[in-house]
Image (cartoon, rainbow, N blue to C red; front, side, top):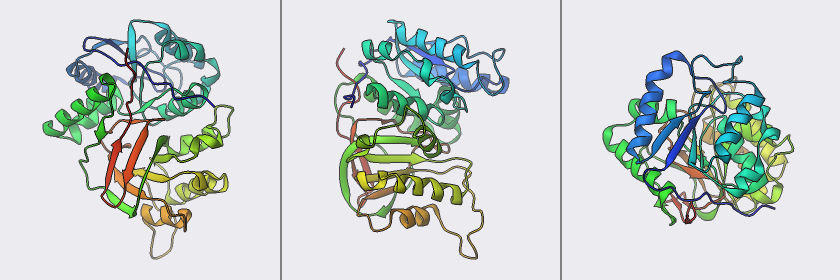
Length: 329
Protein backbone atom coordinates (compact mmCIF):
# COMPACT_ATOMS: atom_id res chain seq x y z
CA UNK A 1 0.00 0.00 0.00
CA UNK A 2 1.35 3.44 -0.96
CA UNK A 3 1.91 5.88 1.86
CA UNK A 4 0.26 9.28 1.63
CA UNK A 5 2.34 11.48 -0.68
CA UNK A 6 1.77 15.14 0.10
CA UNK A 7 2.53 17.71 -2.61
CA UNK A 8 5.08 20.36 -1.79
CA UNK A 9 3.67 23.64 -0.52
CA UNK A 10 3.31 26.48 -2.98
CA UNK A 11 4.68 29.96 -2.39
CA UNK A 12 3.37 33.28 -3.58
CA UNK A 13 4.48 33.82 -7.18
CA UNK A 14 4.77 30.11 -7.99
CA UNK A 15 3.67 28.93 -11.42
CA UNK A 16 0.32 27.15 -11.74
CA UNK A 17 -0.57 25.45 -15.02
CA UNK A 18 -4.15 25.35 -16.28
CA UNK A 19 -4.44 22.16 -18.32
CA UNK A 20 -7.00 20.18 -20.34
CA UNK A 21 -6.76 16.61 -19.02
CA UNK A 22 -10.34 15.90 -20.07
CA UNK A 23 -12.77 18.06 -22.03
CA UNK A 24 -11.91 20.71 -24.66
CA UNK A 25 -12.29 24.46 -24.32
CA UNK A 26 -15.48 25.69 -25.95
CA UNK A 27 -15.42 29.13 -27.57
CA UNK A 28 -18.30 30.30 -25.38
CA UNK A 29 -16.27 29.47 -22.28
CA UNK A 30 -13.23 31.62 -23.08
CA UNK A 31 -14.46 34.50 -20.85
CA UNK A 32 -14.92 32.02 -17.97
CA UNK A 33 -11.40 30.71 -18.46
CA UNK A 34 -10.01 34.25 -18.37
CA UNK A 35 -11.91 34.94 -15.17
CA UNK A 36 -10.67 31.65 -13.67
CA UNK A 37 -7.07 32.54 -14.48
CA UNK A 38 -7.59 35.92 -12.81
CA UNK A 39 -8.91 34.17 -9.70
CA UNK A 40 -5.80 31.98 -9.48
CA UNK A 41 -3.72 35.14 -9.83
CA UNK A 42 -5.74 36.68 -7.03
CA UNK A 43 -4.56 33.76 -4.87
CA UNK A 44 -1.03 34.97 -5.53
CA UNK A 45 0.13 32.59 -8.27
CA UNK A 46 1.49 33.05 -11.76
CA UNK A 47 -0.57 31.15 -14.34
CA UNK A 48 0.35 29.44 -17.58
CA UNK A 49 -2.37 28.01 -19.83
CA UNK A 50 -1.28 24.73 -21.46
CA UNK A 51 -1.51 24.26 -25.26
CA UNK A 52 -4.46 21.83 -25.24
CA UNK A 53 -6.60 24.52 -23.56
CA UNK A 54 -7.44 25.99 -26.95
CA UNK A 55 -10.70 26.26 -28.85
CA UNK A 56 -8.90 24.96 -31.93
CA UNK A 57 -7.83 21.74 -30.22
CA UNK A 58 -10.24 18.87 -29.76
CA UNK A 59 -10.84 15.23 -30.63
CA UNK A 60 -14.47 14.22 -30.38
CA UNK A 61 -15.42 14.93 -26.75
CA UNK A 62 -11.82 15.43 -25.61
CA UNK A 63 -9.11 18.07 -25.78
CA UNK A 64 -6.93 15.59 -27.67
CA UNK A 65 -6.20 11.91 -28.13
CA UNK A 66 -5.32 9.91 -24.99
CA UNK A 67 -1.66 10.01 -26.02
CA UNK A 68 -1.76 13.79 -26.48
CA UNK A 69 -3.49 14.35 -23.16
CA UNK A 70 -1.05 12.10 -21.32
CA UNK A 71 1.91 13.78 -23.00
CA UNK A 72 0.76 17.23 -21.91
CA UNK A 73 0.05 16.12 -18.36
CA UNK A 74 3.38 14.29 -18.13
CA UNK A 75 5.20 17.37 -19.42
CA UNK A 76 3.65 19.44 -16.64
CA UNK A 77 4.41 16.79 -14.03
CA UNK A 78 8.08 16.74 -15.11
CA UNK A 79 8.49 20.52 -15.31
CA UNK A 80 10.12 21.71 -12.06
CA UNK A 81 8.82 25.26 -12.58
CA UNK A 82 5.18 24.11 -12.53
CA UNK A 83 4.12 23.79 -8.90
CA UNK A 84 0.42 22.92 -9.35
CA UNK A 85 -1.90 21.77 -12.13
CA UNK A 86 -5.51 22.93 -12.39
CA UNK A 87 -7.94 21.26 -14.80
CA UNK A 88 -9.84 23.82 -16.81
CA UNK A 89 -12.93 21.58 -17.01
CA UNK A 90 -14.14 18.01 -16.51
CA UNK A 91 -15.50 15.71 -19.18
CA UNK A 92 -15.38 12.07 -20.22
CA UNK A 93 -11.80 11.13 -21.04
CA UNK A 94 -9.45 10.54 -18.11
CA UNK A 95 -9.97 6.77 -18.14
CA UNK A 96 -8.41 6.71 -21.61
CA UNK A 97 -4.83 7.45 -20.59
CA UNK A 98 -4.25 6.34 -17.00
CA UNK A 99 -1.81 3.70 -18.23
CA UNK A 100 0.27 6.38 -20.00
CA UNK A 101 0.96 8.58 -16.97
CA UNK A 102 4.47 9.02 -15.58
CA UNK A 103 4.02 7.82 -12.01
CA UNK A 104 7.73 8.15 -11.30
CA UNK A 105 7.52 11.88 -12.09
CA UNK A 106 4.78 12.21 -9.49
CA UNK A 107 6.83 10.35 -6.88
CA UNK A 108 9.92 12.46 -7.66
CA UNK A 109 8.14 15.82 -7.53
CA UNK A 110 4.64 15.60 -6.09
CA UNK A 111 2.52 18.60 -6.96
CA UNK A 112 -1.19 19.25 -6.35
CA UNK A 113 -3.65 18.47 -9.12
CA UNK A 114 -6.94 20.36 -8.76
CA UNK A 115 -10.34 19.59 -10.24
CA UNK A 116 -13.51 17.55 -9.84
CA UNK A 117 -16.04 15.64 -11.96
CA UNK A 118 -14.04 13.52 -14.45
CA UNK A 119 -10.83 14.68 -12.75
CA UNK A 120 -11.95 12.48 -9.83
CA UNK A 121 -10.54 9.58 -11.83
CA UNK A 122 -7.07 11.13 -11.76
CA UNK A 123 -7.26 11.85 -8.05
CA UNK A 124 -8.37 8.35 -7.09
CA UNK A 125 -6.09 6.50 -9.52
CA UNK A 126 -3.00 8.49 -8.56
CA UNK A 127 -3.83 8.15 -4.88
CA UNK A 128 -4.15 4.39 -5.37
CA UNK A 129 -0.86 4.04 -7.27
CA UNK A 130 1.37 6.66 -5.66
CA UNK A 131 -0.44 7.96 -2.56
CA UNK A 132 -0.61 11.44 -4.11
CA UNK A 133 -2.93 13.81 -2.28
CA UNK A 134 -5.14 15.13 -5.07
CA UNK A 135 -7.49 18.02 -4.45
CA UNK A 136 -11.13 17.41 -5.29
CA UNK A 137 -11.74 21.11 -5.84
CA UNK A 138 -12.96 23.62 -8.35
CA UNK A 139 -12.06 23.76 -12.03
CA UNK A 140 -10.51 26.84 -13.61
CA UNK A 141 -13.21 27.52 -16.21
CA UNK A 142 -16.53 26.42 -14.74
CA UNK A 143 -15.48 26.74 -11.11
CA UNK A 144 -13.15 29.68 -10.43
CA UNK A 145 -14.45 31.48 -13.50
CA UNK A 146 -18.07 30.33 -13.36
CA UNK A 147 -19.72 29.07 -10.18
CA UNK A 148 -17.64 31.38 -8.00
CA UNK A 149 -19.52 34.25 -9.66
CA UNK A 150 -22.95 32.81 -10.45
CA UNK A 151 -23.39 30.90 -7.16
CA UNK A 152 -21.34 33.00 -4.74
CA UNK A 153 -21.04 36.64 -3.75
CA UNK A 154 -17.82 38.59 -3.13
CA UNK A 155 -17.83 37.70 0.55
CA UNK A 156 -17.90 33.97 -0.25
CA UNK A 157 -15.24 34.38 -2.95
CA UNK A 158 -12.95 36.05 -0.43
CA UNK A 159 -13.60 33.22 2.02
CA UNK A 160 -12.82 30.61 -0.63
CA UNK A 161 -9.63 32.37 -1.74
CA UNK A 162 -8.46 32.25 1.87
CA UNK A 163 -9.28 28.52 2.20
CA UNK A 164 -7.58 27.54 -1.06
CA UNK A 165 -4.53 29.67 -0.34
CA UNK A 166 -4.09 28.16 3.12
CA UNK A 167 -4.59 24.61 1.83
CA UNK A 168 -2.02 25.05 -0.94
CA UNK A 169 0.64 27.12 0.83
CA UNK A 170 0.57 26.21 4.54
CA UNK A 171 2.01 22.94 5.84
CA UNK A 172 -0.44 22.97 8.74
CA UNK A 173 -3.91 21.61 9.34
CA UNK A 174 -6.43 23.96 7.65
CA UNK A 175 -9.10 23.27 10.28
CA UNK A 176 -12.86 23.70 9.79
CA UNK A 177 -14.16 24.17 6.27
CA UNK A 178 -16.61 27.08 6.03
CA UNK A 179 -20.18 26.19 5.09
CA UNK A 180 -22.10 28.43 2.72
CA UNK A 181 -25.23 26.32 2.50
CA UNK A 182 -27.18 24.56 5.22
CA UNK A 183 -25.39 21.25 5.74
CA UNK A 184 -27.63 18.42 6.88
CA UNK A 185 -27.26 15.71 9.49
CA UNK A 186 -28.50 12.51 7.83
CA UNK A 187 -27.19 10.27 10.60
CA UNK A 188 -25.68 11.69 13.80
CA UNK A 189 -22.24 10.99 15.16
CA UNK A 190 -18.57 11.91 14.91
CA UNK A 191 -15.61 10.25 13.23
CA UNK A 192 -12.14 10.93 11.87
CA UNK A 193 -10.42 9.35 8.90
CA UNK A 194 -8.67 9.94 5.59
CA UNK A 195 -10.83 11.47 2.86
CA UNK A 196 -11.53 9.19 -0.10
CA UNK A 197 -13.96 9.79 -2.94
CA UNK A 198 -15.15 12.03 -5.73
CA UNK A 199 -17.80 11.70 -8.42
CA UNK A 200 -19.72 8.54 -7.51
CA UNK A 201 -20.09 7.03 -10.97
CA UNK A 202 -16.38 7.56 -11.68
CA UNK A 203 -15.44 5.79 -8.46
CA UNK A 204 -17.57 2.82 -9.51
CA UNK A 205 -15.97 2.72 -12.98
CA UNK A 206 -12.44 3.05 -11.66
CA UNK A 207 -12.94 0.08 -9.35
CA UNK A 208 -13.26 -2.14 -12.45
CA UNK A 209 -9.71 -1.26 -13.58
CA UNK A 210 -6.16 -2.01 -12.41
CA UNK A 211 -6.13 1.54 -10.99
CA UNK A 212 -8.81 0.71 -8.43
CA UNK A 213 -8.40 1.77 -4.84
CA UNK A 214 -7.44 -1.35 -2.85
CA UNK A 215 -10.03 -2.41 -0.31
CA UNK A 216 -7.80 -1.50 2.64
CA UNK A 217 -7.64 2.13 1.46
CA UNK A 218 -11.26 2.43 2.60
CA UNK A 219 -10.53 1.23 6.14
CA UNK A 220 -11.58 3.96 8.55
CA UNK A 221 -12.05 6.42 5.69
CA UNK A 222 -14.41 9.34 5.31
CA UNK A 223 -16.09 8.54 2.00
CA UNK A 224 -17.20 11.68 0.17
CA UNK A 225 -19.15 11.70 -3.07
CA UNK A 226 -21.41 13.76 -5.30
CA UNK A 227 -23.36 13.02 -8.46
CA UNK A 228 -24.60 14.76 -11.61
CA UNK A 229 -27.02 13.90 -14.42
CA UNK A 230 -28.10 10.60 -12.88
CA UNK A 231 -31.35 9.11 -11.70
CA UNK A 232 -32.07 8.26 -8.09
CA UNK A 233 -32.33 4.63 -9.16
CA UNK A 234 -28.83 4.73 -10.68
CA UNK A 235 -27.35 6.27 -7.53
CA UNK A 236 -29.13 3.68 -5.41
CA UNK A 237 -27.61 0.97 -7.59
CA UNK A 238 -24.09 2.43 -7.38
CA UNK A 239 -24.32 2.67 -3.61
CA UNK A 240 -25.33 -0.98 -3.51
CA UNK A 241 -22.19 -1.80 -5.52
CA UNK A 242 -20.20 -0.15 -2.73
CA UNK A 243 -22.18 -2.17 -0.19
CA UNK A 244 -21.69 -5.48 -2.00
CA UNK A 245 -17.97 -4.82 -2.45
CA UNK A 246 -17.60 -4.25 1.29
CA UNK A 247 -16.74 -0.55 1.10
CA UNK A 248 -19.61 0.51 3.36
CA UNK A 249 -18.44 -1.96 6.01
CA UNK A 250 -14.95 -0.40 6.02
CA UNK A 251 -15.64 3.36 6.12
CA UNK A 252 -16.17 5.35 9.33
CA UNK A 253 -18.20 8.24 7.89
CA UNK A 254 -19.87 9.52 4.74
CA UNK A 255 -20.08 13.06 3.36
CA UNK A 256 -22.47 13.76 0.47
CA UNK A 257 -22.22 16.80 -1.79
CA UNK A 258 -24.96 18.85 -3.42
CA UNK A 259 -26.54 16.81 -6.23
CA UNK A 260 -26.98 18.29 -9.70
CA UNK A 261 -29.69 17.23 -12.16
CA UNK A 262 -30.46 14.13 -10.13
CA UNK A 263 -33.88 12.98 -11.26
CA UNK A 264 -36.43 10.48 -10.06
CA UNK A 265 -37.28 7.60 -12.36
CA UNK A 266 -40.17 5.63 -10.96
CA UNK A 267 -40.46 5.38 -7.21
CA UNK A 268 -44.24 5.38 -6.98
CA UNK A 269 -46.46 8.00 -5.36
CA UNK A 270 -43.94 8.86 -2.61
CA UNK A 271 -40.63 9.37 -4.41
CA UNK A 272 -37.49 9.15 -2.25
CA UNK A 273 -35.08 11.95 -1.55
CA UNK A 274 -31.34 11.49 -1.85
CA UNK A 275 -31.22 11.18 1.93
CA UNK A 276 -33.81 8.41 1.77
CA UNK A 277 -31.85 6.27 -0.65
CA UNK A 278 -28.55 6.78 1.18
CA UNK A 279 -30.07 5.68 4.47
CA UNK A 280 -31.81 2.79 2.73
CA UNK A 281 -28.52 1.40 1.40
CA UNK A 282 -26.42 2.15 4.49
CA UNK A 283 -28.98 0.33 6.60
CA UNK A 284 -28.09 -0.19 10.25
CA UNK A 285 -24.42 0.73 9.88
CA UNK A 286 -23.79 3.27 12.63
CA UNK A 287 -21.71 5.76 10.71
CA UNK A 288 -22.19 9.54 10.76
CA UNK A 289 -23.52 10.93 7.48
CA UNK A 290 -23.25 14.61 6.62
CA UNK A 291 -25.28 15.74 3.62
CA UNK A 292 -25.64 18.70 1.27
CA UNK A 293 -22.03 19.79 1.79
CA UNK A 294 -20.52 22.50 -0.45
CA UNK A 295 -18.94 20.44 -3.21
CA UNK A 296 -20.20 19.08 -6.50
CA UNK A 297 -21.57 20.40 -9.77
CA UNK A 298 -23.90 23.01 -8.27
CA UNK A 299 -21.69 24.69 -5.68
CA UNK A 300 -18.41 26.54 -5.43
CA UNK A 301 -16.35 23.57 -4.25
CA UNK A 302 -14.58 23.44 -0.94
CA UNK A 303 -11.21 21.68 -1.39
CA UNK A 304 -11.32 18.03 -0.28
CA UNK A 305 -7.84 16.41 -0.32
CA UNK A 306 -7.70 12.65 -0.79
CA UNK A 307 -5.75 10.85 1.91
CA UNK A 308 -5.81 13.74 4.38
CA UNK A 309 -7.55 13.08 7.69
CA UNK A 310 -10.83 14.87 8.21
CA UNK A 311 -13.06 15.15 11.25
CA UNK A 312 -16.79 14.77 10.60
CA UNK A 313 -19.34 15.84 13.18
CA UNK A 314 -22.64 15.14 11.51
CA UNK A 315 -24.55 16.12 14.65
CA UNK A 316 -22.95 19.57 14.71
CA UNK A 317 -22.83 19.65 10.87
CA UNK A 318 -19.12 20.39 10.61
CA UNK A 319 -16.22 19.08 8.53
CA UNK A 320 -12.59 19.87 9.38
CA UNK A 321 -9.21 19.04 7.85
CA UNK A 322 -7.09 17.94 10.79
CA UNK A 323 -3.82 17.28 8.93
CA UNK A 324 -1.73 19.37 6.53
CA UNK A 325 -2.58 18.99 2.86
CA UNK A 326 0.90 19.97 1.66
CA UNK A 327 4.42 19.30 2.91
CA UNK A 328 7.15 21.82 3.63
CA UNK A 329 9.27 22.64 0.57
